[in-house]
Structure formats: C-alpha cells, structure tokens
Length: 384
Image (tube, rainbow, N blue to C red; front, side, top):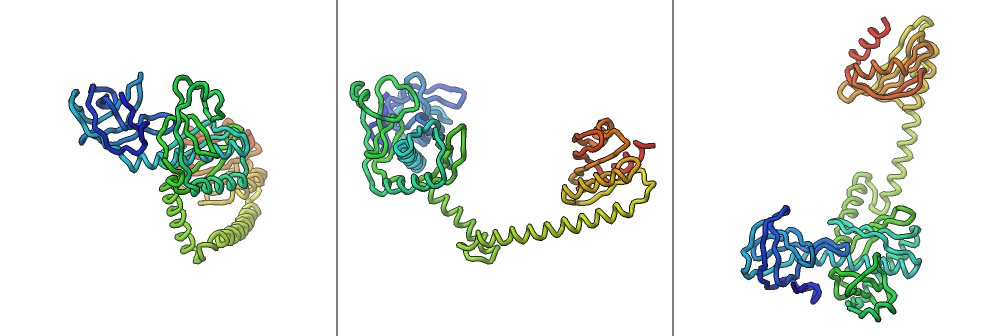
C-alpha cells in the first residue's frame, strides 16, 4: 500500500482501488492500494473524510495495512475517489507543528523533554519533564510565535542509520527501521510520522492557555491556528459580557470583580456577626431544664452553627442540634451532647432518615433527608 500522505501532507483527493472490504466491530474495514488518509499515530488523531460518498469515520494501521473504517460496504475491486476532510487535517497539522516548536524551544532553553502529548478536539496537552514558571512560559510563547512569523520551511528527511547516529534529535522512544525526521531549522529536530505544515507561518499563532505541575514536571495546555482564534473570541465574548454586567470597561473588569469580592466579604462578615448575635440570644433564652433543643434554618455560617451546638450542648440535658437546609434538598446537621453517646445514636438516626455522617460520641455532623416534622418526630420518639 502506498502512503500518499508521506508524498505530500496537502493531498486532499486521490484515486485508489479497493483491495478488500470486510465487516468488523467498528463497521466495515476497507483496505486500498494507496491512500492519503493518515492513520492515528505519533500523537495525532486519524484523518476523516469520504471514499466516494461513503463516510470514513477513522483510520488505523494494523499489521502494515491501513484500514479505513466506514459505515457502508464498498465493493472489493472497485475504484474510489478519496476525499480528505481538509479542515480537520489542516487543524491537526497546525496543532502538531506548533507543539513541535514549543517542545523544541523548551528543550533548547531548559533541557526538558516532552514526555507526553495528547491532542483532543479542543486543545493540546504537552507534559514536560521539568517545572516552568509563568515568566518562562510567557517567554516560550513569545519565542514560539516569533518563529512562526519567520515563516521558515518545515523540512522532512529520511536519514540513513549512519546519519541518524550523528543527528541530535528528540524522540520519546527507541526507534527501529527507517526514521522520519521533522526539522524546524534552528528550533527543533524530532522523529515524527505525522503530517505537518510546509511553512511555520501556516501555524498562525500559538497560545499557551494553561500550565499546572504534573508528575514532577509541567503539563502545558495550548492551542494553535484557528483554535487560538476560537479561544480568543470565546474569552473576548466572556470579558465583554462580564464588563456589561459590572458596568465597567473591558480592561477594568478584573478591578471591578475585586471590588465586588471586597464588598461580598464585607457583607458576609456582617451577616456572620448578625447570625452570631442571634444564636447567642437563643442560647441565653434557653431555660435551665430543657431536655433537647433543635434549630432549623435555611442557612447559617458553618462556624457559627458549630459554636451554637458546642455551647448549647452544655445547656441541654439531652441533645442540642442545628439543621441547615430544607425538606426538598435535605438538611446538613450538627448534633452535640454531654449525656448521649451520639456516635451510637447516629446509626439508627441515619438508617431511618436516609442520612450519613460521623464524628465523636459528644458531637456528630452529616446530612439527612425528610421534612422538619419527620426529623422532630424521630427525635421525640427516640428519647421516650
């Protein structure tokens, strides 16, 4: 089988003869005498497209044969016209070529290797063997785009074994047989079997949109070309909407959010103070002979709620508790007692009210279902 995608990554249509077509688990498995469909490999997903009017869903290489998985059968011996989904192919070429430039620059600048590479339908993730700071990644992004704008030719070579032994190139695994080298002069030399752009300028632009520490190194999320434009438009739309909601200029929206956060923090602190005073008044009004006391509220600060129970259990002969929530969504509870073993009590409590939680004998917390009436009824019956 002739692999036309190695002759040129820009072949969009081709003629071929069907050597075989067999029914398989993924549909029909079609083998041609030649193909421009790139099979999944080298970190790049397979091409998609059509053979005549029959859709090619995915392409894989197995035992030296390239198998085209189709929804319909194609008669063996017939001639077909293959049509590559060029929008998809070019997008994948942009992403993969951009990744090579980034990985090459990182390797040259910091000596880190690309130890993992995944290309999804939205982004690329690259796992680097060392940690990079935000400033270092910003520098790599600038240098990557500078190389793109130089519009250098991407060179594909097939060096002999002797030439390969003298060549300094990147590869994530030991290679045998004929090795295909993709070189971006002055920036990267890497063993790779996937289609790439002819000129770096075709990558368009690269954005490193996220980076996190991962397995002792750095996982970088990036987009290239049309994906970078899509990412920019999505974020621009979001910033525009945020600025509209905040009545602020787009470039001042972050400052406006900080102001809102400060205001929200101030109001939360005020609310907590009010809740604390309310809880204190409730405790002050508890009579000295109260057995059990249970308070039901929609929402109370968790520290205020815990403090209420912690102080209330000393004023109740039995259990003091607070239930936060409602019958529809369920309740979060805190129960405290100086006389009842709540850890033992919780088993029947949870079984009856469909709850879960834990703690110590003097204080437990968790969640339960049911209405306030059901919960109060259980508590009353439990201590009769």
